[in-house]
Amino acid sequence: MGIHRRYFYPLWLRLWHGLNAALFLGLIFTGLNLQYASASAANLDFRTSIMIHNVCGIALSLNYLAFVALNAATGNGRQYLPRLKSIVGDMLLQARYYLFGIFRGDPHPFETTPQRKFNPLQQVTYLLIMYAVVPGAIITGIGLLVPDILVRQVFGLSGLTLTDLTHTVIGFILSLFLLGHLYLATTGATPTANFKAMLTGWHEDAHEPETTRGTDP
Amino acid sequence: MIGMKPLPQEPATAVTAANQKCLRCHAQATLGYRNATDGLYVNLSVNPDEYRASNHGKLTCVKCHTKAFQTFPHPATLRRKQLVCLDCHKKDRKLLKFQFPGILREFQASVHARKLGNKFTCFSCHDPHSFKIHARVSRRVAQTVLYDNHICLQCHSNESAILLLSAKPQPSLDLIHAWLPHKELHWANARCIDCHTAPTNTGVSHQILPKERAVRDCVRCHSSNSLLLQSLYKFQVRQERTRDGFLNATILNQSYVIGATRNYYLNVLSFVVFGLTVAGIAVHAGLRRHFGAKRASEDEKRRRHGHP
Image 1 (cartoon, each protein chain N blue to C red):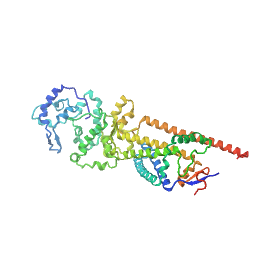
Image 2: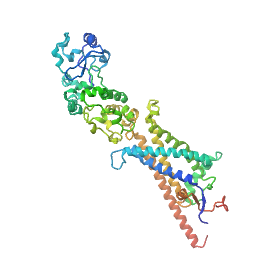
Image 3: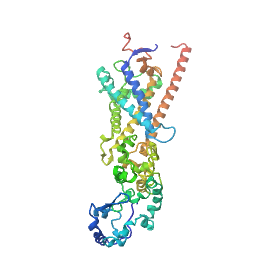
Image 4: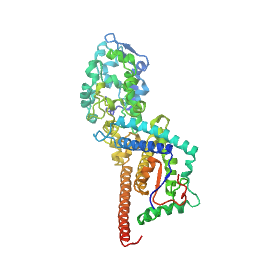
């Protein structure tokens, strides 16, 4: 018994993740500042907020392109694809673990391996977030950055209003994701194990994983 | 001069017939002369179609211009008579709601009146022969913006007009607004006067401020207590409140202002969902801690009793 370590996260992935996280926080903070803008001293200056939000948004978009390219180049993109045949059952199994098993101290229902780092719920959530929600934020963000390219009217509603509403709702969904993501990251071998793993690349297991016994680097 | 309902009317056909005599000459597009004393061009031309469609369109010309103009050639002494909007607009009780005395006070405190004195009158901006009430009645803010900004741009995009009035060259509007993000978008969706006047109680503030006192603080408009609600959206807000009783609907359907455009229901929903998520996480974390501690103490007991 004891903590077993395996190298899971290559440097590029950790750099991407760190940069993404920092930009995410900057965008949420300045986004809230813009949405709830007021002259109060608690608010960052409006123009500074816009400037930071724009710079972070552009940087996050470039970082996203790098993520897509590197996912394709390294094969890491496969991590996000759930097993379609058993997807519903797998997700329920993982949900049941989070709702009940975790309190009983049951082992994680899906063992993490370098080939399958994410559990089925992670796969589906990350797939939706990274390939639908984040691109949505980027596309609507570009629309707000260069409003001239927007459709002026959509069914009688201003295109700008619609774009902003979508951008705000997406921003809100991503904030909720961040909350859940940070909390579930505490469910590793120890509450801080996953945070350390994203810094060092080394994933920790409470038990020696069966699939890699004897093959640790 | 601000929008108004016409004064007591003569029948439309009689008005047209009476005005026709004047328009035989004054409908000519180039009718006018350059004043020898100040060099300003005095435009004597009236577009009949614009006049008929204007708020004054149902008045006979001599209602304002005195019956002495019915003789031709017009007596030279009439040329010196300066018309004043308040001659009619102060006396008529029906026009009280337009607050002309207040507008006059604002105008007198404006940078135009202070710097240009008698060279600047109501008619410098408002042509009484084509003037149409806009902000109060328009349901489309964009049209009000276009109409009102055109009034300012008559001079402020016309170098010779500015030179004649102030003897100073007009600085480039692009350059002096370079600090304003998305300036074209601002110009299409807000009026010059929304930033360049002091907020007042009259319908449309006429107290144009010196440029260094114009609004530069973004959150004056970009916040829930937006300045625009007291200016550009003043009448819209009143109308919509009466009709829908819901302020957000106005803003949401008419335009989009970062920080001011907030949908009330979405706002509440977002706070509830966020609160529930945080509460859910807190409960889950609490249960994990509780059962974790319980398991740890059971393990401890088992160890003490010699069980592995």
